[in-house]
Structures are given as structure tokens and as C-alpha cells.
Length: 222
Image (cartoon, helix red, strand yellow):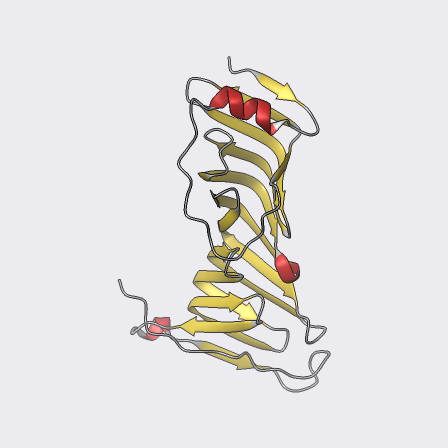
């Protein structure tokens, strides 16, 4: 039986020493991001020494403005230098500029002791951000959303839809820049892959009307 331990705050150094036979190669340092420590907090953990994996329950991992929460998380050792963690069950991710994502599952990539990227999947996965220029809430959904922490972007793919509180845009691929609050939309050659924009009449929502700033991109290559 795999040993388990229960603690409100886990000592990462102890588990890391137990699970690691040697240091993992460091990934290239991503641009942007922060240099603050990564914090891990969980209700319990279970270590499988044969497979060198650890499973956490009711887990939170945070660094700077990025926080990942889920009912369960699975990883191969406590390696934040170059690793991929799987989160399952009521996944919530908060990022900079009040950006938030929610999904059924997520794969979070770590590089050079930083949270680099999170790929979330759901039916659908959802994103929202309180816009700084108006009182409106930007929100969207897709089958898959990729949050690039260093770039400050969210990439919505497969049945992607996004609204700025006044206007709506949908298409095969939408890339929303959290920092600039700008969206890029990509269509496909097929009729079902076109970009659609809906602008509501003035006065239907609070705040001044705003049309999404879109930048059509070349169709994705197969």
C-alpha cells in the first residue's frame, strides 16, 4: 500500500527528497513570469514509490498572481524544474488582471521553477475577467483553453465563444490577451469555420458600448 500523509501545509522538500533519485534537467527559462517561490498546500497526499508518483487531494498550488486549485492533483515527483501536473475535479485557476478559469481537468506545465502554462478542458471550460476599462465582465467558453502565464494570453479552441459584456464573437480559435484586453480570431476555409460577431444595441448593458478589437489571422494549418 502506498504511504500517505495528512497535513494542512505539506513540506515539499521532504517529499521531493523521497521521490527524486537525482535532479531533473532544467527547462529553458520562460520569458516574463515571476521569481517568487511556488507554494503547495493540500489536505492529504499519497506517495507511490514504485511509480515515483504522488497524489494530492484538496490541493492548491500558487506562485505570484497564479493560483491552481482542484480536488485532486497527480505528479511524478515534486519537480517544478520541468514537469507536467494533472489536476482533476472542480479545477479553478486564477491569474493576473483578475483572470479566472474553471474546468473539469487541467494539465499545468512547470519550467525552471515557474508555472508556465495551463491547458484546461471541460464541457465547456470557462474563462472570465473583470475588465479595467468598463464595469463589464469579459467571459468566454470553449472545449479547450490554454492559459500562457508568461504571455498573459488565453487561447480558446473548439466551439470558442467570447463576450466583452456588449458584443459577442465566436469562431474555431480565439486568443484573448489579458493584459491588453484584446481578442484575435482565426477562421477556417470551410463555411462552418467562419468568425461571427454580434453587437448588441446601445444601452442594453451598463457602461459605454465597446466592439471587440479583432485581428483576423490565417487559417490554422492541418
